[in-house]
Image (cartoon, rainbow, N blue to C red; front, top):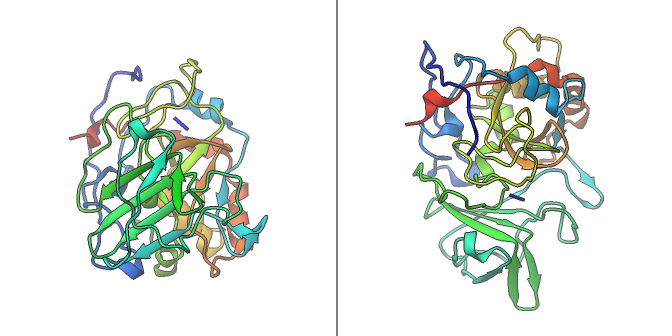
Length: 306
């Protein structure tokens, strides 16, 4: 996991709009960050960023996007990054961190049956996302493991869901870019109502040794200026026809036109993150594999920064 030289900023002629991120059904009183949070800002009216074509080509213009979430199991674990919701009665625990200098000390409200990305035996990133519905706090952990009576993790971050406060510059979170993971997940409850009103999170295999707002951290030693920095935001091009896609994929693609997606971690190219749910149609989501990288463009988000 783990300053960008940006071309001259061009102020968009039409201001981007904002919408509240949809609360989780089990935590309806808690917004997923304020309406003016960067995750909740539309980017469909923003200008294309200088160097967009080179960046898309560096990621892979002929590679296709993939829904890194769905129904059922893959290698014995849920497909996607699961979410655990707790209340104020949940006992909090101390966590020992590998990257303690860039982690929030906590304590963290981790239930014994906390849901872990890939399942309890996963050898992957083992993200755990925990929402305290009473305090409206988000607790995110990377590589969470239980060792006897103790919890250990690679890194951890705590977020106030009513605040736009970012991590300190140079700090990771549970994600390489130093961003929260939860607001960037595609969720079935949103697709069921017909709209996703926020940006999504995605990964690329090669990033640059740089980060740009709102990211706070990089995870690369590469210096090729065409490579994306952590925090770079792309959107699906306006003229890309989504009318023939099945419903679930069509809702996701509409969100990618309106809100785009943010480079959040190193991983497979054009892999879009979501939460597992038995109601996803994997056949529907597989249709996203026909969307090429060349259908995306990098946007200039300088006007969103306040």
